[in-house]
Length: 264
Image 1 (cartoon, rainbow, N blue to C red):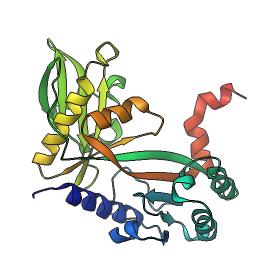
Image 2: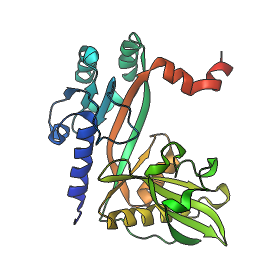
Image 3: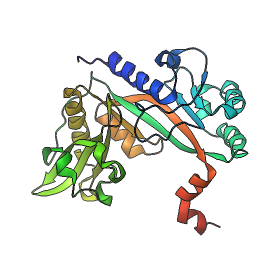
């Protein structure tokens, strides 16, 4: 399959439509769209469906995938504020406060990146790079490589590129086959080797390898993770869409864990 930037974006929207239980063209409508969430075996594997409240924007509007009991709250919210303000404070407190009455809190917020084929190219690495496959990952499920690999979903980790200083692995970009057409890239570089171009060399090389296999590479980062966002841009990726998800308050509290106890 010959991929273009336009085709890559269309594939991403089609996957988001599967995840949200809407149509791909809904992301391009001038008005916001609210749909009922539903489980789908073709959705990204790490998503927990159906959603209670999940907002997606490709920049034109918001598609809200929801539990029907939250329709009035979510519809009122996304029609009250401009699209970009719905994903940030202070406006975000309005939605969080309303959902909290039903035991939910805003939990995940992230920006997603797609490759720009006009700028994506192999980048030089100060260390030797080596293409890796699933069988090469078995000893690498440690905290050092927890962004590149996911121990809970080992079966999805399908391809990687490692950087080596001598025989020692010092950087790893790997991807998970999260859905049929798109593979997500994660990256880790050991502290002593950062700011040397290792991350961008690994990320760009892996993105090109994914494209060779007819899949679309994508990259996710928190807005505040400047290092990760810079790596995405340097590697040839560009912002494509944003997502925000509400989760049960009990889950949010569990994720905050020890830190929450320390500030009481």
